[in-house]
Length: 145
Image (cartoon, rainbow, N blue to C red; front, top):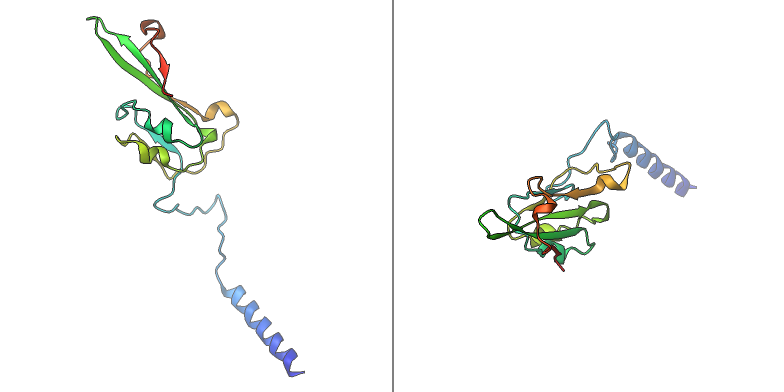
C-alpha cells in the first residue's frame, strides 16, 4: 500500500513540473525562432565574383548547378569567355559543398528557410546576363563536364 502513494506522489510532481514548465515549441508563424548561425537556407549567388571555373558544379552531390560557358567575339576581333550558371534549387540538399568549393566566394547561403513555391519552374535560378544575345555567340558553347 505505501508503494501506491509513492507512485502517485511522483506522478503529481511530474504533472506539476509539466504545468509550470515553458513549452518547447512556438506558435509558428506568429512566433519565429532565429536559425542557428551556421544554418544554410536560400542560396545566394553573386555573378560578379564568379570566375566560371566549374568547381561548384563538379562538387555538387545533387547535380543542382550547371555552368554554361560561351566565347563571345568582341568588336576588335578578340574572343572573350562569358557564361552563366543555372541552378535547379528543387534538387538542392543544402549541404553547402558548392559554397565550400567556390574559391571566389560567389556562392553563399542565407538564413531564409521558407522556400515553398507553387510550381517547379519557380525553383530554377538562371544567372544569364541580359547584355549578351545568343546571336552574338559562337558555336563554341559548352557545358562544364
